[in-house]
Amino acid sequence: MGVAPPPSEQRRAELTDFLRQRRARVSPEQAGLERVGRRRTPGLRREEVAQLAGVGLSWYTWLEQGRDIRPSAQVLDALARALELDVGERAHLFHLARVELPLPTRGYSDSPPPELAALVDELAPHPAYLLGPRTDVLAWNRGATAMLGTPTAAPDGLPNMLWWLFTRPGPRSPQIDETARNTLARFRGEQARRIGDPDFAALIDALELESAMFRELWPEHEVLTGQLGTKTIEHPELGTLRLRHLQSVPTEHPDLRLTQFTPVDAATRAALARI
Image 1 (cartoon, rainbow, N blue to C red):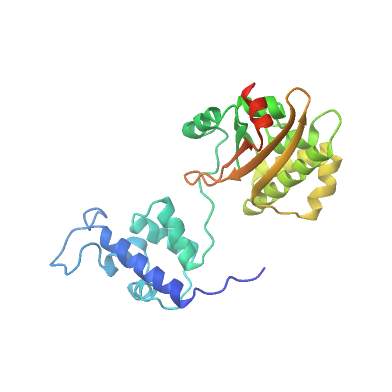
Image 2: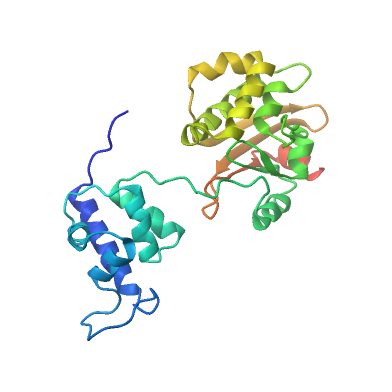
């Protein structure tokens, strides 16, 4: 694996400005420190940030001055806590420092955030669904049920898109096989971020036992991150459906994937309206 190139001078200048601005935004009282002496500028002093983050003053000063140093993820997390950064600001700090953003320590949920579950329902009659990192189905609206059916549960009892696509009974079409392959390629990208996760490993083991197609594709290491395009579905009741589809990442829940479909033509729009 290659090593990421060091931050450019422009990137280090942005990091300098960001640290100084966020340091000025936090008062000693907010940080639980006693205000001592007169202060020429608002916010925390460099030595106070270093103290709160558990790093050396000289090291932090060099970082804020834009020196070519390589902070670790643990140190950046400590700085993010000291500067009271929110989720977006923390990610921005990591990006400026060219350090890979760690996975959340809390793991991931098998239930949807209420606001996203409501959004999926309200998108009907347009099909839409919400997946977790392991392709567990967290929300699935009536449009998706009418167009695609109902996902089955993996052996652990959770409805799972990958399991459904690779183990569904009955005849398989080229379209189903293509969707299965693309879903596996996106799953592979998530799995690489979570090597050793027992829930991912259990699903992979179960699929290897159950699906010859999975056994064939898994060693190929295909990876796909985005999903934007058009799809034609020959539906037994709704007729020919021509749709645009998009998979997106909700900014407040970056581990989740929201997929939605919209009609390309009037006939598809009318068919979806009958759902």
